[in-house]
Length: 416
Ligand SMILES: Cc1cc2nc3c(=O)[nH]c(=O)nc-3n(C[C@H](O)[C@H](O)[C@H](O)COP(=O)(O)O)c2cc1C
Image (cartoon, rainbow, N blue to C red; front, top):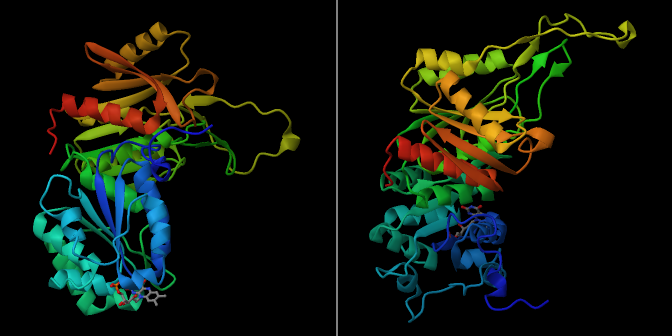
């Protein structure tokens, strides 16, 4: 069936998130082979709501077609500056100007020119407008490693950093300083434009399952995927927090988030205590640590020829109890998975847990028949002293946003 209205080239906008809704991103492309990633990058920015316009250097045109980038963004591509003063239209001091100038990929050549105030290509002119006009400038270098290590380039990079330019990547692989991944660049762009209400705050998040050994190769565990933990860690990072993510398996966090991986509940406990000792303003427990462990671990692999096996289980230590005793003032959010027959029963269990654990906020969800565990969505009940609210089924990153909004209000954080 024919779809009405809109622009068929832009129909993917905001399909993955609204973080960049109403934001204009000027995507500057230079002559690196990494420019073949630009269509994917532009499309992903659009999926998060951005309106993307491409500006490219002549060298970039040898590697990626302007037509491809026009298709990818649905906007005209600036290949040279004309009497229309495209640089002023995109980044001059008027209301409709760019919210962000993103140079991806950025050659060693363009990086150095930007630092020296040279503008002799459409890209360097846009960078010049951003640097002089206070538009956030994010740069994603890509080059062969020796080019990137050129002391002149390294010094120019430092100069740009001193002027508030943000660098994403590169990743060092196969002798190359490769452009950061699309996910990393999109996340950094969203962070740059997000309200920074958690700036300067130290946040420790736990996520994923832990395991308890039956013998050297067999374990008891649970079906936690770590998706909620990663969504919370990413969400706090986007809002400016310094995040430390402690996880026992499950989804890996993105590389820019400091993370520590553990196996058992005892390891998670020890690692959490170490992280908290480094300083912490907010502790979020979204992990599902195994709360029962075999009384003893068999020293060798148990043979099936031994027949039926009975296991005696003992409860593992409660991390939250120890943290509350050691840090009585710390703001703590605890996730609580329950198999509750009704909404009322879930609320009752969550309120009891809030009281017993000393957490400041409990996020409870019903996990009967697999709900919540391993899925991309969840529905939760957020309980604080004297208040509760229900969040109907939605993606875990939206639940993370709501939880962080509520924590921000409770801690009286201000949006910068
Ligand atoms: C196939 C090819 C790939 C290149 N890749 C890179 C690269 O990844 N990084 C880089 O700094 N220069 C790279 N160069 C060299 C730049 O294109 C060259 O320095 C050019 O002058 C850059 O111009 P621009 O910065 O205006 O785009 C490459 C050149 C070619 C022909």
